[in-house]
Length: 420
Image (cartoon, rainbow, N blue to C red; front, side, top):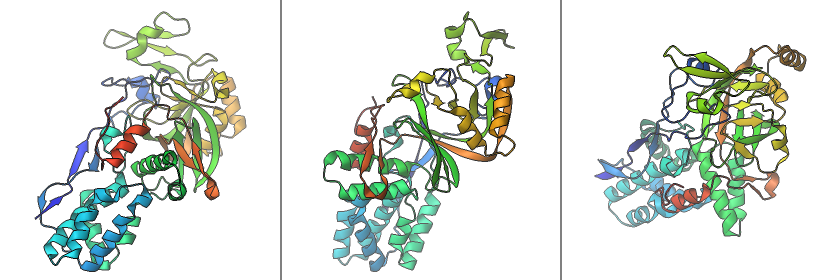
């Protein structure tokens, strides 16, 4: 009998900060107006993620031939190249088993090692409790797929190829591995390890066309076929109102948007000039801010429903884009040159710059659809590898999250530090 890697379903943490008047507090339901405005889904998206952690329970181990088990041992011995700790994936146990004549011991050790290592490569080794405010879903691996991959790898003598097939395909992952291999100082080693791990938290393939927001870099990038089509400066959530990391799908852009004020912050705008009060069916009052030069969302916002009502939008406060540090919003992503970004995101011949400008000038609220639904990933990377092996770019860990990740990696996927 052997221990098996069981799945632990961990509910994702709900965000507590509000973006520029839009993020929903924990337990707060979106209004019909927020749903209609593309800020939140009509039916909440399940934020549970099956993450494989720890070795628990018992089962009959799968039979391993010696060649496949030796290949697994070799892979584990070099897993530090992925920024992981070889000792955490049964290196000693498997090596000891292979040195003896007990086939059952080899089967047990190899099964345990493969399950834990494959989960780490596909989903990351750090548990959700150490992924502060991280709500990006990763469905690259499930239990049934794990066992199927293991059995095929044993039969085909393809352990290395099988495990390699679970790694992120993004160019940055490979370049960060090169940085890690060439690093001579602890700081660079830890920066590479942390951000390699965060790439494993994302889907293995991000898609042919997507938007990625890197909060510590204060940037928004539109990527097509692996190439950055446009990169814009961004203002992200302040330390007290951090931007959560999440995934959504952009389906359109609203020009001259209304701001639907969440009930949780209605007291902040009550009685202020420029807001419209509307009676609710329950007898209460909600507030809206009409389009105009002073609207908190500026001249456009991206339609990308998610459980936290986080989205990309314009802002009347343009001066913030000139600052090197731009953690200043209530959570949403304020985007520089928003109309140019909107045109590129839409990718719709009908919506050229002239039509966008005319729509803005009209003052009417208009929704334009993207040519194709476009995934949006709001991520948190504190380091990036430069092209052609030129080193690493470091970004300030604005929300102080790196230390927990480093500690958890070193402790084999255990949460080593309390949340800050």
